[in-house]
Image 1 (tube, rainbow, N blue to C red):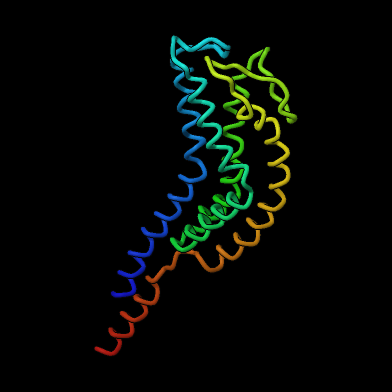
Image 2: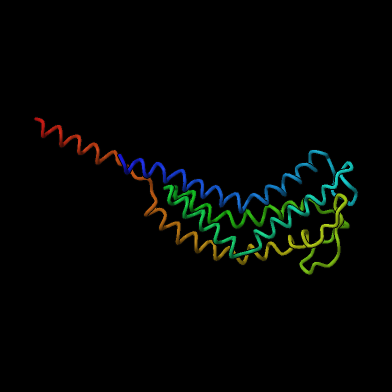
Length: 198
C-alpha cells in the first residue's frame, strides 16, 4: 500500500514538471499566436498602418522577441526538452516522453516562424542578413522578423541531434518506463492463499 501511495504522489509531480517544461518552451509561441489571432479577429490585413487604431505590431514584436530568446538558445531548448522527456518517463508515459523530445524543439521554433510568414506583405523585408525594415500594424518589427528567415537552418541543424537523442532515450523509456501491471502477482498470491486454506 505504501508503494502505491508513493507512486501516486510521484506521478502527478512528474507530470507537473512536464507541464512546466512545455509551458517554458511553447508559452512564448502561444503569446505570439494570441496577438496574431487578435489581428485575424479584427480582420486586419498585414500592413504598416495600425490595426483599427491598435498598435498590434508592438505586441507581436515583443512576443516574438521572447519566443526567439527561448527557441534560438539551442542549449536551453534541448535541456528543457530532455527534462520534459525524463519527467514523462518518471510518470510512466514513454510515448509522451519520446514525442516531447522529438516535437518540442521543432514546435518552439516553427510556431513563431509561421506567425511571421503569415504577417508579412510585399514591402516587408525579411532576410538572414537583417537588411531592411518591416513596419507592421504601427511598429517597426526589426530583428524579430529577420530572425524567422534563419529558423529553417536552425531546425535542420537541430534535427539530427534531436532524432538521435529521441531514439536513444525513447528506447530506454520503453524498457524502463512502461506502466507496471501488478494484477498478475496479486492474482497468483490470492490463488496460493486459496490452496493453503484448502
